[in-house]
Image (cartoon, rainbow, N blue to C red; front, side, top):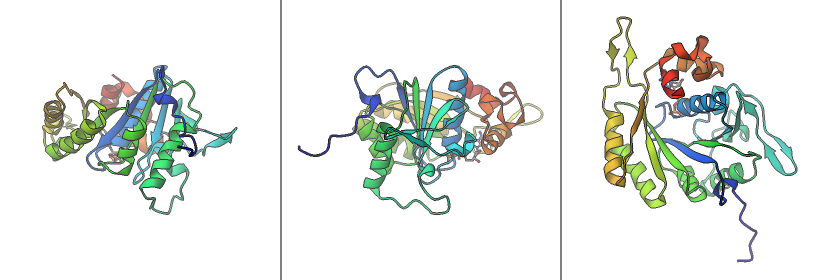
Length: 263
Ligand code: ADP
């Protein structure tokens, strides 16, 4: 009481039509950011108005994956996000020194995430994607508090200690009542020249996470996709043109992982 008014987050206002998805994973390096960037670019290419909040403090990579080196500008006290491949994006990496590790504590991170949601001129978005840090740390909890209506998308590998990921994600979702929309298994296999699939990282992780979340949460949490290892996905991310829109040197139709994600 009597304090400054809480900043208004447009996505939580009654009548907001924006679908908000928080992309999460149990650990780093499983392709969470690649999935986020490729999904965002694919949706923008399909004509949707898309925004991405890169809140992965330990590995902000969305600007690089979308080929943006722009910094946000200011207008009337609002932050104007850069646009890359039709995607409006804001990243914690835009506000810190590249060479310095981010050592912010919880309250500062919370304020940063809050600002990304309330002080950025997003306009009318169809979809907002948030690339969360792996695990269930401060940012994940802040997002749960700030965006209770956000839906959670879990990215995992086939080998991941599935039970653990599912348990932690399930716990958060139960507490926050956020809905888990599904699981994407990444790096599921490598297609060999003879067409056979080599399961480099084993198999079953995605299905196990989905099954376990379904049980914990009491509603169907589907395994949405199993994305192959795909050199074009990696190249697209490295060159700043996501494979879903033709990055990696070939049409998305020829990049199996990109094709799956576009669908
Ligand atoms: P995370 O966000 O989970 O830390 P990234 O999206 O940064 O993971 O992916 C880690 C690395 O793996 C990146 O170099 C990325 O290009 C690569 N990568 C991710 N998914 C695939 C895939 N399906 N095929 C090939 N490389 C991939």
